[in-house]
Image 1 (cartoon, rainbow, N blue to C red):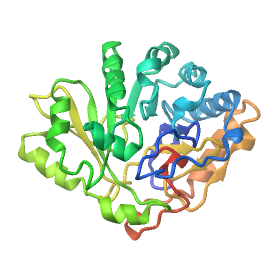
Image 2 (tube, one colour):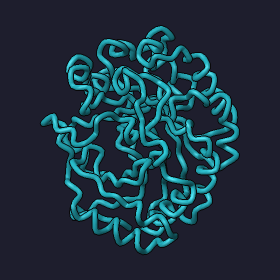
Image 3 (cartoon, one colour):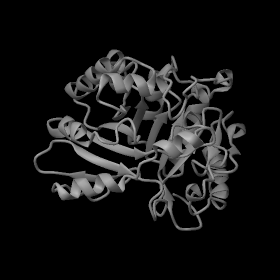
Image 4 (cartoon, rainbow, N blue to C red):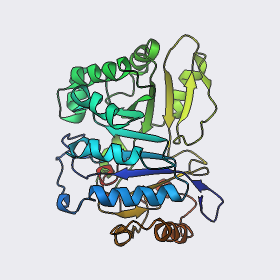
Length: 323
């Protein structure tokens, strides 16, 4: 398995399929998507070679991200290709939910095993204000449909925003009371393009943890191949609450994931200063060559990001790589 100099092992690939997005979230793309590299996106065959190489290196989980990955017309083919790769046990998708209600059955038929849906408010007006889209009802219907179809791993991603949802914990708790979903609050992260917005809207997840523990919520053991969320459960709720807090101490200690952009750039860290181009290795199906490249590059992976020092690396906005 891939390992860095700090003895961290990497079994989780986050693969961006596109930088394009059809939402205008105020913390990411307030002026809309300006993606100009759509023609340079990885092809289905290149994705097949990429995933086969990562699987040969011990990767068992692949998350498909964006931008908005459902804008790829070949998404079902991509899901199927990844799922049929020997060694890959979990294929997850992170989406804004725009096509969820319509397409979830097709994704499941292709082999999808887990779903993350970005929902930053359960109030329709606030959701519209944050995302630029008046589609909350349809997205929530899509979540219900995914559950009804038997998808066992459904998560809701909510970026913590002081002004927009910072005082809405009770509303979110009511939402998970009778739904077997994991709702995760994600601290707003500073990127190259959102400095002033970050200063005004950043809210620490520690305040949420204090409220949860005071109400009897208990921290759950972290699952193998899971992301960095601290997950809390309560006996009176079917769902759970997670906290992703990149500004907390030791956040990077057990990093287990690598990222590849839609144009074949390897991100050793979400906020790295430099990225490594591995596209030249994807023209042929040559897993050993890709594994050797990845292991060599991992020797340069830093122990931690530098967000606390306002160093965001080359990440202009999260649509570049999907967070």
